Length: 128
Image (cartoon, rainbow, N blue to C red; front, side, top):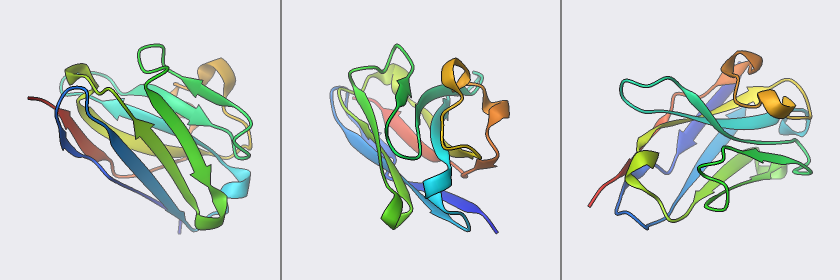
């Protein structure tokens, strides 16, 4: 049984930082690229980032590039999303998702239909 469990969300002031974690069980992360998505109230889910299984390639939504960094420790079956200089518009539920491929779906990394397994999400709220 595959499970992805996100943690690390919370309330942070603008300009602050958070690190999200995604712990996988029931699958070997050596064979899965991992994407990060978010969904704000009243908005569609959007792709934020994707990191290949070997960390050799990463993709980022333009609005988070330079502020967010994905990383992973396959030995710990864990993927991370470091989020710096957070803005109120980053407020959303953040999800991690696994695609059955060592590579991210390229320019389609933000297409949720390409991912096979999903976590339950963790809330990130950026507010003063």
